[in-house]
Image 1: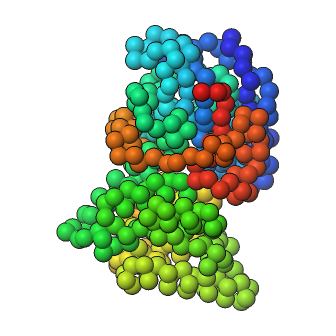
Image 2: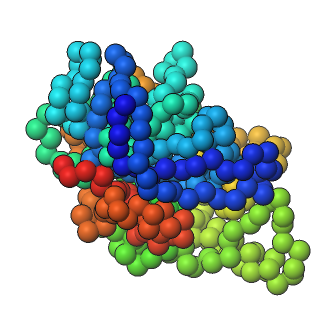
Image 3: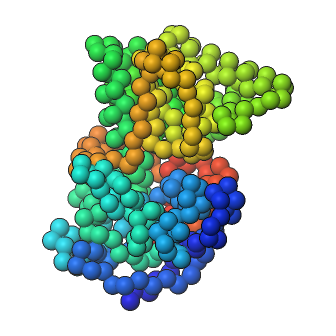
Length: 387
């Protein structure tokens, strides 16, 4: 057995309706697991990336992952940088090698993820542990003699996800808008690390790009990257619950005022056309405004949701306006090395403030800060072991 120190999520109560499930908490405690088999490597995590799926697991929305996996306790954390301690029988890895973790616990015939390592895949142990074991084919070595730091590489997941989503969204838009100059069209996104990375790809492709942010620091960061920064505070009442629409006239009026200001902003940035591509990873609360802001032949694209899984639209309007809806998840396994090399070759990689990285002792605080929106970085990281 391998014994380690880990942050552990325990299963919630059985047979409880989704809406009644109490959220979970991480508990730091000793954790043991069997030695790696011939397909696995023993590794020590260096940096982990705090992803929305950890928040979903802690909230037990949409599922209790422990119950889903039929396990009493799980160790989360499926994206980050690790050092190989024992490569086992792998011919492609060596002791001491630094690798990125690819989260493909189960892939379909075409290489797309069906089950995610250290989330819904049974018997997988995540990076919120000082030692863990990972299937060797999920470890992608960093480029030799990379010009970028381990901290920068640790934020790869949002970039890999953005690369895949952008490939699909751009091709969908191009299918209807052949021979159009991207410089005449707007790509807009709600704030977030994946969106930031994706808008930088859109900018490389020649599009106008704009993104919301709600702090002065983030607005300045976007402007410094050549992205038009839109202050989210200009439309504070834009959220809309489609399953429980407001009935209070004052609340309805506040929403309409915010929506009008938002649509005016998009119109001004797009010469009245609307967003050609809208990257919306928030979900239901902002979806009504997202769809209203789309141009004809526009694309709304997403890689998941932060709040609210169910979205509603009027199919007739979407057909008449030839809106395309793109939904992707993770990326294709065969593209892992391609995306890594693209990052190295083009410097499409974030700057990371070392002062913003949480230590292993501070993971509980990281979880709280993330859930309450107190993290200023688009790429929240935690350090498990010293590089």
